Length: 241
Image (cartoon, rainbow, N blue to C red; front, side, top):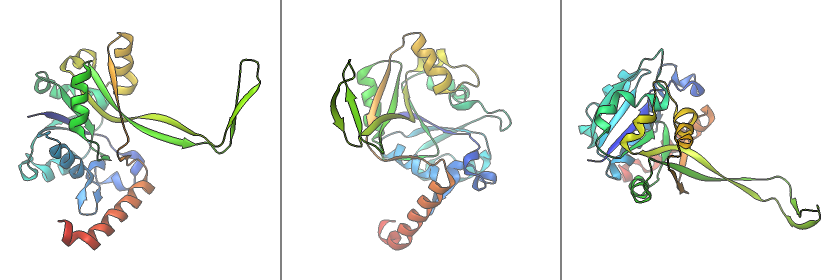
């Protein structure tokens, strides 16, 4: 079985008041919680052994998913304190023993995507390196046209309202087991672990993708998405279930 870790321990403060009583991964989208979409995508791409790092209102997650058999996967849980969460990287430490034998995937329990996770995993294996980060290609259109000048400030060409491209860290990673050599308690991947890897000249690969991806981080995003999926389910549910 290929192993995947799903990070589910956060309090989802940006989605309050919805998350006062429900952990963010368990917020419903139509008839299913967000986390069920995440697990279904993992299963679809062959990740059948799943570790959930849980903390805030963890009982709701554990009661719903159980051992995973109902969803066609094997699920184990690793808990952190609600009062003092371990952060994204630190939350892997309780599962360290189970992850030392092979390459593993890490995803967030509150992101929606249709990225091909198997392709992502295989890309990492081909490129070698200690880590691969999924990078979502995004574009932000500028409101104005811009001018390009040469070294003497002579205008050489104009560009009308160009789109500035960025590569967004999508919170999906593939790691080799020795990543644990660089993880300390309470570490965050972006703020602590990745800078540490770069300082040690470790190879970090980027997997650039254009598939759908959404971090449901604002109440407006959640409300629109939930309404859309609920409507689709109401209209087409009997055909797609």
